[in-house]
Image (cartoon, rainbow, N blue to C red):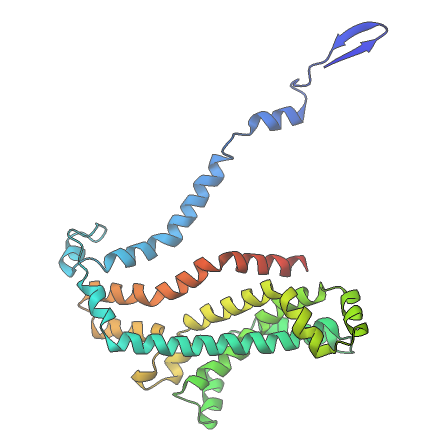
Length: 299
């Protein structure tokens, strides 16, 4: 770069050592910071490693696992997965988990949308207090309330039933769902609601035609998180379910491990098949989850 000073041409070096921007540009590599990639891959390996080990372990025999616990199947054995697939116990527990998971997801989404719509769009005296109350509910784990909850469900004759699992999971899933959905509903412009009212649209019509489509990322996030949380629930089914025909998969995995403690390979196959649906759900809808949480933070 050149400039004219008193008729003379003076050359300036824009990449001089004192320029911090030049140093910053020169320090960058085309592939980014290798240290960040190293720790990212290390974290991914720590999270994915046990899952991969369980899935591959299902293709091995007990003698292979005993001889070389960290080795690969040699040869690959498909009998473990075949035995689990042909087992009525696995499919019965899979259906039970689907019933409880879908019931919990629908209940959480419907109730959280209703409550969040009132908190976000209506102005009343205890608006902020109600929102803070639901936020405080996130700090109350289900394990703390397991004994009084069991006594309550026993008095309601809901012990050893799927409904007895669905209702508490809905109650404990609502705080997180409301915290996510309220910012989405608040971000909808009031002018849009006023225009809908001028066109003769009722509040319920505005809720169904405008709120639901605009808050879809948050709704999808809440639904996926509640479904996966219900799918992985172990403590509540352990206390409430006594009939093995009503076991969900997490409880079924524990019982299967106890009954087949000497058959490690088959236990690994059963465990991997029980967690694959949740992994598939998270893998397919991970962008929805990230988008929903990002919208909630921005709100």
